[in-house]
Image 1 (tube, helix red, strand yellow):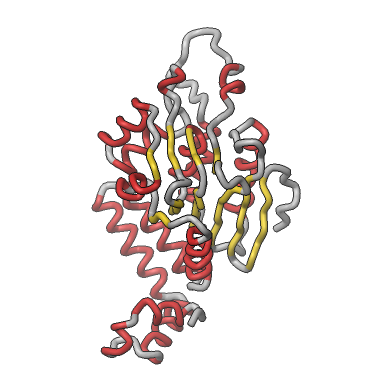
Image 2 (image 1 turned 30 degrees about the horizontal axis):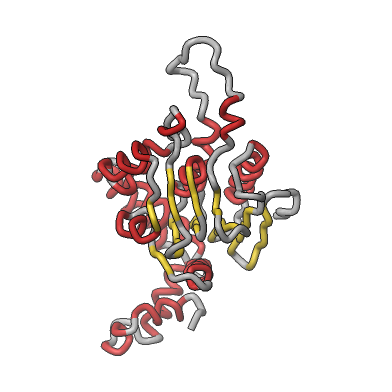
Length: 281
């Protein structure tokens, strides 16, 4: 699939990984133009069967995505009384959730400030990584007299806990990288100097090396954790049975035994063994 018709996002495909770099000076505000490109990109990536992993990052060393364009919010219609059935934010919600539900592993490489709608988008990615002293998260909506309307009030409490989400959203305070990691917003935090990008490349290539069916159905099974436990366990069992019947699964399990799996030496270096299964010795 060609990804050449984007102006604010540069997309490069390397094997089974797509890297999208936001470049919308001066601070990567989520303008309507950037939102349109990211929404289209989410659909393109979702439909691209050649991909295993999608990485979103920024060309700006200080900003990942600042927040949604406040001037655009001020232009939103305010006549009449809000109707509960008028689901006005559905398109933005749909874009954010697409990165959760698509059968690719989605990674946000957040090495600068992220706020408002940009943070809401990031929270819907499968993984988030940051850099100490560079990554800061801020939900500024309540100080602006509104609330996070792009999934933030629903996803953040699920991600970091209700009490911590209350502090971040109600206080409009910065959540620094170390706090974000400790609270569960970030998977890991790295020192400045390229370590974050290097790790993202490593984990992305590692995932991309594993069997397609396993990557996609494992994500589907993890997403089922949002369901009641009994339903999630039923989904897990069904998906496991599907993978058991794939040629790639049978081949990988056989190779595992051949290269030292279930031996003392092999089990002591299981991470390395797993890499060998994907051809990343």
